[in-house]
Length: 298
Ligand SMILES: [Ca+2]
Ligand SMILES: [Ca+2]
Ligand SMILES: [Ca+2]
Image (cartoon, protein in one colour):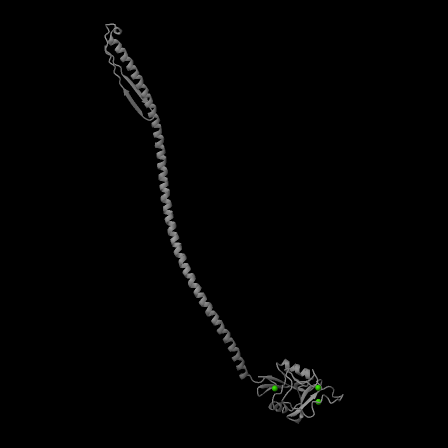
C-alpha cells in the first residue's frame, strides 16, 4: 500500500503574499493482507510514521515561525521605507532651502561689496570736501583780513580826501593847520566854551607867535582857552596842559583883579585889542560877556 500525503502551507501578509509549499510525500509500504504489527517491518513503519508526524510538526512550527518573522520584517521594512521617503523629502527640502540661502547669501555678499565701494567713494568725497572747506576757510580768513585792511585804508583816505577837499564851513577861517571861529555875539567864558564844544571844537589854545598875531589881528577882545578857575594862579589850557611858554601877558597881568571889588575874581583869560600883539593877555572875571574864538584842528 502506498500513501501519498501532501501538505501545503499558505502565509499571508497585508501587502504581499508568500506561498510556501512544503510537500511531504510519505510512502508507506505495507501489506494489508497480513497482521502488520506482528512483523518487524510493521514496527519500522510505525516508527517511520511517527517520525513523519514529528517532521511534519517541525515543518509547521518553522513555517509559522518564519511567517511571523517575515511579517515582522516586512512591517519594519515598510516603516523604514516610510522613514526613508520622509527623510528623502526632508533632504530635498533642505537642499532647496540650502540653494535658496546660498543665493540670498550671494546677493547679500554682492550688496555688501557694492555698499563697501560706495562707502569708500563717499569717504573719498568727504575727504576731498573737507580739504576744500579748509582751503575755503583759509581763503575766507585771508579775504576777511584784506577786507578789514581795505576798510581801514578807505576810512583813512576818505578822511584825507575830506580834509583836502573841504572848504571852511561858514563863519570859520583857516590859519596854518587849524580852523578858527570868531563869534558874532558875546557870552561868559563857560557859555563860550560850551558853544565851541557844540561846534566840535574848543576855545583856542595858543601855541606860537604867529597864532597869537593872527588872533590879535581879528581886532576883537575874545576869550581864549586858558583859566585858573580850579586853582588860583595855576593857569591851565582847555586840553589840560599847564601854561608854560609861549605866554603873551600885558604887564602886569595876570593880577586876578588887583583886589578891586568891581573887577571881582579874575580866573579867565582874554586877548585885548588895545595892546601890542605879543603882549595882549589879561585875566578877567569869567562872568563877563565878550566875544570868543573856537579852534579846530584840520
Ligand atoms: Ca592853537
Ligand atoms: Ca585868577
Ligand atoms: Ca586882570
